[in-house]
Length: 467
Ligand code: URP
Ligand code: ZN
Ligand code: ZN
Ligand code: ZN
Picture 1 (cartoon, protein in one colour):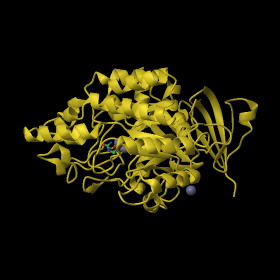
Picture 2 (cartoon, protein in one colour; picture 1 turned 60 degrees about the horizontal axis):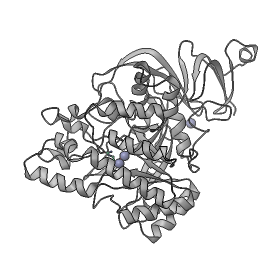
Picture 3 (cartoon, rainbow, N blue to C red; picture 1 turned 120 degrees about the vertical axis):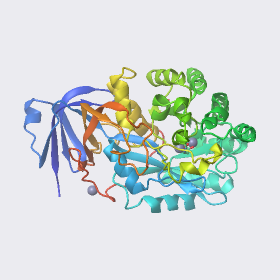
Picture 4 (cartoon, rainbow, N blue to C red; picture 1 turned 90 degrees about the vertical axis):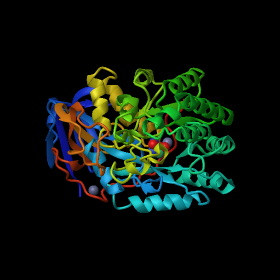
């Protein structure tokens, strides 16, 4: 059955253009764009016509870093694929790429199957997977080739969390060498976890148990050192590198230097590092636990370097690292010992709005907003131009965005399954009005009309962002 939707009169914003255009959608895909008011556009009819006058018409957000139901520190991230993807849609995100986890001593296949089982039939929006590699051995390396072929084309490794996800330099080098051959992209959690664990032990021995010490022991220099080491290991392997959740200005400097040398190294940051700081970690009465994530929030002065990196393309992507744990019963596991606070912040619903606020505040342009939140993540992880843009043939993942609406972010009104907001009380200008996923309304004028199971699994091609 064929269906047609016409979106009229909005300002279509992509990474490359801003035009007053109507959008014709046929059978879940963008069929055509034409300047509003022209005879070509006026001739279009649809089963459904959306008036977007005064609004932006943008590609759905692509969030390439989420952790629905992640097991961590003896508990699980509190959003399921059902609740997390619904919240994502509310925030204008129509694609997530989540991290399947290889258990130590288990195969990649087992881990991937388990994540498929969690997601299948439950997602409101489309989803793909990266693979967390926590056990590099000969079998794992062979499996990486197979995964790349079937559409899991990126692999996260950890220089942090010894005894859990940690890989040593030799394991990292081997995985990088493999990805240099099979086209996979290594995503690195760059923090020197061995050194950090020594500082954790020493801090706790001094009685420094509050959440703010999480930020003090996970030093910016140890993020920069690991970033540098990851870059040089990738250079030796001849592989591209994507560094996740960059928070320290010294780490941005390492990326910028390597890029100036012409290396294929990329960096992602997250809204929490752009909008929050160690001031939040120091909030009294254990409230700081709400802001415990790794890499940690940094002192405010780091933010300007991150914004600059986003403008100069030394950082290319903003994703959320959405990994929610409730304050009550989950974050509280670390009362009296900050190292037992489950790491991670909620945010999948807030990213598009916070980055629009950055447009309002003058940090980035409108097109750069779409580039870092939609187009580049799609290209970096092999989803472009199906996702990340509005062009004939692209999936009709479309957000009608009201750039003038005012809202206050709050746990009272958000849709993430978590009992606090990291941005509680923050005023932002701009709000999602309507969201289409492959042409179907998921949010219809601020009403949820989606359903679990609409979201489809996305096999991905290899990185489309290499020089
Ligand atoms: O604190 C964080 N970021 N939790 C999620 C796991 C990770 O390292 O990305
Ligand atoms: Zn990480
Ligand atoms: Zn993460
Ligand atoms: Zn559907």
